Amino acid sequence: MMKRPHPKLCGLALSMLIATASAQAAGLSSEHKAFGKTHDGTLVEQYILRNSLGMQATVITYGGVLQSLLVPDKHGKLADVVLGFDDVQGYQGGSAFFGATIGRFGNRLAGGAFELDGKRYQVPLNDVPNALHGGAQGFDKQVWQATPVKGDGWVGVTLTYLSKDGEMGFPGNLKTEVTYSLNEHNELRIAYQANTDKPTVLNLTNHSYFNLAGAGNGDILKQVATLHASHYTPVNATLIPTGELAPVKGTPMDFLSPTPIGRHIKDKHPQLAFAEPKQGGFDFNWALDAKGDIKQLAAEVHDPQSGRRLQLYTSEPGVQFYTSNFLDGSVKGKAGKTYLHWGGFTLETQHFPDAPNQPAFASTRLNPGQTYTQTTVFKFSAD
Image (spheres, rainbow, N blue to C red):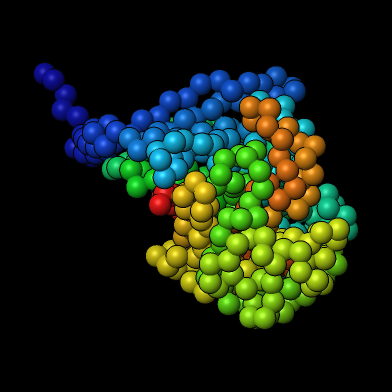
């Protein structure tokens, strides 16, 4: 007598079949292959997501990196709009966090230290006198496990990493999942989820450098940015927030209306000098007016020459707009192209920098039994 399948299993299989058929019908596809090996011989894989409009996102398991992103311009011509490298060794040896998943704590921690329940924790200093992006061996330097995933109208890859208790000084065994997905609306979605077995602090983000003219095709000074943020968090000389929430009006940080990135980047302003002492630059956290409402447009950047437009939506309260102030023309990236000073910009969605040490900022504490979630969407179009 034939044994009937369990009805729940039948339902799950049918749902997966429908989702797969839907993705294929929509012209979506994915594949994965070897990308190379780390210095110690660990295999690194590459996952390629495509839609019918020509957009293609490539993610590698080293660092959870968005390694390339092909986006059409106003003539339909594709270009890779994120800076990075063609091999694993470039990412292993680099210090610019190109395309990386950042953790446990994005941005800076003053003195690399924080307290939880009266106990002090120390993260190694890799941006003296502070810790930056989780320390020298943060999530960007780990090899993640990957699983291809599909849904109704999208394809993606889910990356997982277990950060053990005490890694880079952070408490708790932390399991993190990051899912990159691409749909037929030229939206790249990054969804984060994490759980811990001890109280810890957590601030995850993606550190892609964008150049809408194409990675390595000059600087981004003529590209036009709009940041829907009436306030930002000023910093001291070591780029740690002062704790103030200051209005952008009357400062070079005012991007409330469309403004070329280079218009005020060299202004004589103490904040710009802190970010880049020689020439000025942006490297600040803007407090988004959307306040975590992912349905509201948070930021937008447009390249008048190519017509490419990036729109940002996020569940996070802040975004770090950084203009690659410390690229100096010495970094050779993909296809042998040189990355110039101001050769890219980041939109790192986040809770505010140094939040564990700033009582006025929203908490970044994660307790056992809680689930950390965050979603960020990069939507592309062309005029």
